[in-house]
Image 1 (cartoon, rainbow, N blue to C red):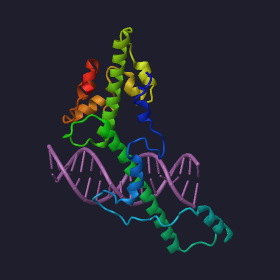
Image 2: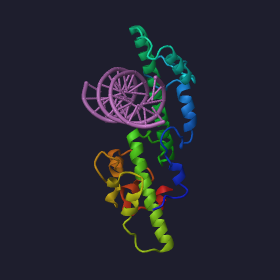
Image 3: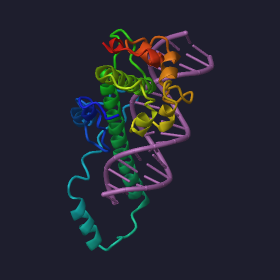
Image 4: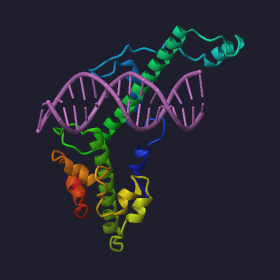
Length: 215
DNA sequence: TAGGCCATCTGGTCCT
DNA sequence: AGGACCAGATGGCCTA
């Protein structure tokens, strides 16, 4: 089934640093600047300074000075290593912050009660998976009741042809239950009783899916 | 106190 | 060479 026009664009996840999520772009900018939220260790954070936009120039310079140049002293070498490591750590931290921002954005569009505890990462992913599946079913049902088409055809083909989830997850339609511990919506929702959202009933009982479940 | 979740560090690999 | 991505390790915090 074709992705719902009103939803599809918003879910366009692109590779690398594009920001399909509200506020993600700003996050990207601020993550580094603002101190890491972590209450734990905050390693000497800077590592910027060097390595600006003169990469090409410095490379040329180095080359002119004699190709590989003379071997650096152990001290200089370890200094350089540490500096690189530090920069890599900063980038990695930033990357994870971006990932978390995206996850937060995802939490923001999932139906949960305000007093619900924040979903964990894995719960968020599983719930989203579940939610998308349920919405898809809702659309399907709506389509059929609208146009009085033939009885619900097994939607497996369409679903499995989609980009959402692995075919394995969807293949056995009518019950997105799949491998335990995977992105199984049912499993994920049953795992934690506190996860009672408006969408839950529909998700747990796909057959009984009703649009009102999402209102 | 054990177990779950999380943030961070780290080294390896792949890509540009 | 440097950046992005990944997975493993480690340690802190929180809750049952």
